[in-house]
Each structure stands twice: as structure tokens, then as C-alpha cells.
Amino acid sequence: MAKQQSESYEAFIKGIWRDNPVFVQVLGMCPMLAVTNSAINALAMGGATFFVLVGSSFLVSSVKQWIPKHVRISGFIIIIATFVTVADYTLLALVPKVHKELGAFIPLIVANCMILGRQEAFASRNTVRLAVMDAMGMAGGFMVALFSLGAIREILGNGALFGVNLFGEHFEPWVIMILPPGGFLTLGVILLFFNWFTVKKNEFIAQVAAAERSSL
Amino acid sequence: MSQDKPPDTPEVSSARLVLTLALAGLISGVAIIGIYEVTLPTITINKARELREAVFKVIPGVTQMQKLVYKDGELIPSRETEKDEQPVYGGYDDAGIFVGYAIPAAGPGFQDTIGLLYGFKPDRQLVTGMEVLESRETPGLGDKIYKDADFVANFEELMIEPEIVVVKKGKKSSPNEVDAITGATISSRAVVRIINETHVDWSTRLPPPGSEPLMTEPESEPLITEPE
Image (cartoon, rainbow over all chains, first blue to last red; front, side, top):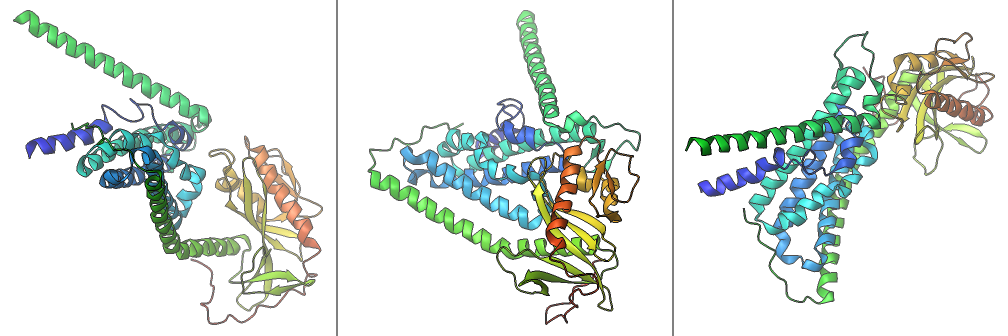
């Protein structure tokens, strides 16, 4: 039981941090750069992707034994596309304003390689429980990444967060941050930080190990 | 972690492959039709409400509206929705007296089609308001055609004859000029061009001022009143 729990926890948590789909695997760059010009758009995109990924992983892992190996990719795509269409219509009905902002990028979730990647690499080889945990972790990590980019770009480029003005009238917006180059700049800086952090952490672990060895 | 390989499938016949995908496609199709049917009423209501709110916004002083279509050389009230129709909306006050038209217009913007609605008072040849219904203009720049209150305010009392002219921000001096948005000149010009072109299209079709269609009595459907 304890082993089972730690296994699902591990499947969940690795997507949030260690194997973060954006900052570590550098997947899903198209929505990452395109819709993160404001925090609310980033969250809506993250939410839609979350729904699609968790739904697809659940379904793929449940029906995996009936899908012949030769047509598995087409099968996965049919499943993903169905969930995307459901998300598309649901957003259009419930939050038409957000749907208007996201526009063409909702149907394009089908082409998010992170989603197909998780089906092929994980959901089609694991139990339903693990697949759902893994999908929630990956989608959660994706959402965290989208939101941090969206928040940074909206604050710098519009002087606001969730449309609420932060700095008053005299703030001169850094317009390039909400244009495409701003996406690349912000993502680059965050990736730089992530890699620096990983290097430092590994150095620290190595130092501790060395210290332990010498004290023996 | 159980990274087991998927069980080795023995040779499968092509019929089975085709059947699997056909079945998957069928189930997916049913699911998509399902969600379409479920969400369609809400989506239709949302669109209709958005349009109605826009009509009341672009013609001030209006409390009732009806759809008008141009048919056989005259403008007549209509309740049916026809394919490819090009309606305008007549706005009336409490007493049922005609106030102005709300005219839908569309045309190319900087990135995609801009769809908008503008209010028009034929007796004074005046644009009374403009509301963007549909646009994919650049977030943060081009989308100011509906997010920038100063730009939208340009259209609240704007002479449409001989035509609307875009000038640099702050240079507006005559009643038919519009201050462009700094950094979004193309989108600003697009909005004005769309209104000018639509105005030319409609100017021959609208009846002379004073002989607009009367407000018809609303049928069983709920009275359309101004939103709070």
C-alpha cells in the first residue's frame, strides 16, 4: 500500500518539478509562447490542456489492450482530438470572452507534442491510476509554467495582473513583453534560471558526498 | 516505476486495424455531436445577447430594437433568421419612435476579419457608437480598437459625410476625424475603412430620414429591454 502511494506520488510530482514539460523537457512551446501574454489566458490554456491530457491518459490507459500496436498513434490522436473538441465547445459556451482571446490555439492543443508524448511514453504502458497521476503532474507542471510566463509578461508588458492595474497611471508598459519576442525573452531567462539551479544543486550534492567520504 | 513494454501483439489482420480505427472514429464522432448539441443553445444565446447589448450600446437612448432586412427594394422588419442575410437593427425609444440604426460591418483588419457594429442616426448623418464584435488583432496593440476607451469614444459623435478620416493621435480637429491609436495605426484605419465602406453600401438602401419602418408589436417572445 505504502509502495503504491509513493509510486503514484512520484508519478505526479515529477511532472511538476523534476521533469517539468516546459522548463526541463522543453515541450509544448507553441501554446507556451503564443497565449502567455496575460495571466488569465495562460490559466485558461493550462486548464484546457489539463482536461485534455488527464482525459486522454485515462482513456488511453483504460483501452490500451484493445488498440493494436500498428495503429496506436492514430488511435491516440482520435482520443486527444475528441477531448480537444469537447474543451473547445465547453469554453465557447461557458466563457466566450476567454475563448475569443485564445482563438485558434484551442484546436491546436491536438498538436501539443507533450500530450501525445505522455500517451506513447507513459499512459499506454501503465495502469490507469498511474497514468492519471502522471497526466495530472505533467499538466500541472505545464500550467505552472504557462502561468509564471503569463504573469511575468502581463506585469511587465501591461503593468497589470489579471487585468488589475498594479502600478498606477505613470507606469510605462514594456510593450515588447506582450508581443512574441517577449515570450522568447521571458522563457529564455526562466530556462537559464532552471538550468543554473540544477547545476548548483548537483554541485551541492557532489560536495556533500565528498565531505561524507572524507569524514569516513 | 512500471515502465513495462506494451505486450507484444501478434500479427494483426488489416481488417482488425481498420475496424479499430473506424470504431474509434465512430465513438469520437458521437461524442463530438453530443457536446455540440449540448452547448449549441448556450452558444446561440450568448451570441444573441452580445449582439443585443451591442445594439443598445451603440445607439444611446434606445430601449427597444428590431431586426430589419433589405428585401425587394425596401427595408422591412423581420423575425426569421435567413441564410446569408444582411440585417441592420432598428433602435426605438419607449414610445416606439425611431432613434437610429445599428449596422453590422466586417472587413479585413491587421490579422483577421474585424466584425463590428456601429450606430447611425440618418437624420444627422452621425455615427453614434462603435462596438467590435469579433477580432484577432494583436493583443496589447491592435486590440485597443475595443479596449482603449479614448479610441472608442471617437465614434460617439462622428460625422460620416463626406467620409471618416483617420488622423494622428491628438490631431482631431473636425467632426469627421478620428484619433488613431499610437502603435496600432493599421487596426485604427481598418475600423474606419470598414465603417466608410459599409456606409456607402447601405446609403442607397436605407429609406430617406423620417420614413423608417415602425416598431412592430413584440410577439409572444419576451420584451427586449435595455440591459442594466
